Length: 133
Image 1 (cartoon, rainbow, N blue to C red):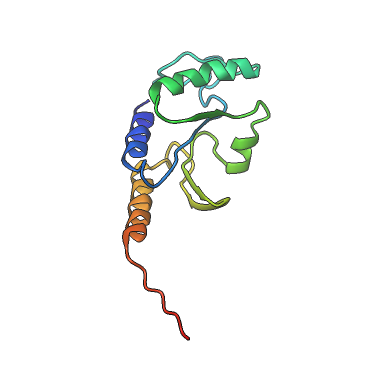
Image 2 (cartoon, rainbow, N blue to C red):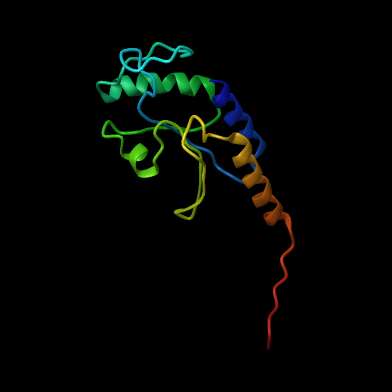
């Protein structure tokens, strides 16, 4: 949940240049599977989409200002983006512009913040256009 709060702070800081979306995928540490000793919630492995939707509500509570999508039960989004179990992306005009490392070790909000800072600087820099006639 601490990472989720950090993500929400990042989204609030860059709301002027980016739209943010959380995608809830399969549970990394289900209570009836590979249990984590520091798990904040007791969430069993999703058996159906309704299970996943209920679990996603916990994420919604952790980041109420950010839109939330839920992956399908065949984990299509997770597979397409290699998000097993968390990952940060920037997508612009259907092209991946930034791909963070796989979580938990590769999930680095600071790295994404740096990318967004650089992007914002480029947006604010006057660009020179040369027209030859």
